Length: 313
Image (cartoon, rainbow, N blue to C red; front, top):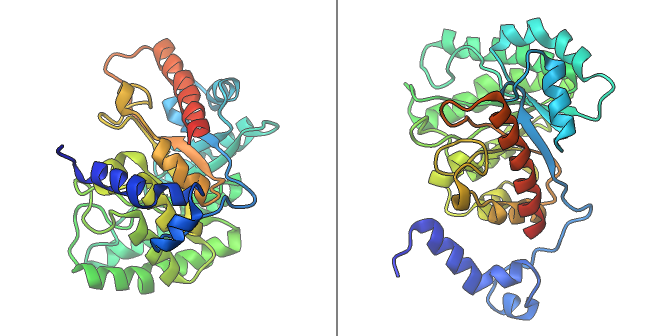
């Protein structure tokens, strides 16, 4: 039987320690040197989120109405860059007022690139990310997603990591701490960056930053090509995991579009084992020529799919 690396890890976990992780054979787990992971208290919760601009509608109110009516309880803020967010924050605050919906994170583009040698590029990252943090705090969002470095990277990786920790993060994190907002690093796949690709590496940076205002996220789409195990990736983040993105696993469309390939149970098991209570939020696209009615149908189906697989985990 030929196995790819994800399948190898999955089968290896099942044969060597998968049962131990879920308490089926604690004696054998201890004998094999495998840790026993107990269900945390309080237990994990599933909070379904969606990027707001994926929802058909002419206004924020229309989009939020649909999300509430179809089982979503979190809204991910997207739609533009830092200046767009600042200009639209009041409108979004008014549209969500009085609802059970809550803003989870912002997925907003900052200016600059922390991976470039030019100090003006790195300064732009700091200034515009601080602006995003301010808007997120105003809206009561939990965090701000940040991609530390995109494809263009001038600095050697060890130097980039040190500059990121010593020159980029401290000023942003001090600002975030004051406003009660978390900076959330997003690992990407190798087609988008070579700097931060694994959830565990993001958690290590968060640990070394020594701030309560930093964490990491996992994105099922990026994890499909970069991680050996969804469950292992989330466990490796532990307390530093603050957000999760989800999409179909072959084409990065709405979950469920890729049918049998769209399985997230392994990852949901990991989320349950670490007591995750943040959002699992859709960041995806639609098949070509999808009408607004079809988009709404796909989003409603996705909510059902995620809840079903969460229960199976």
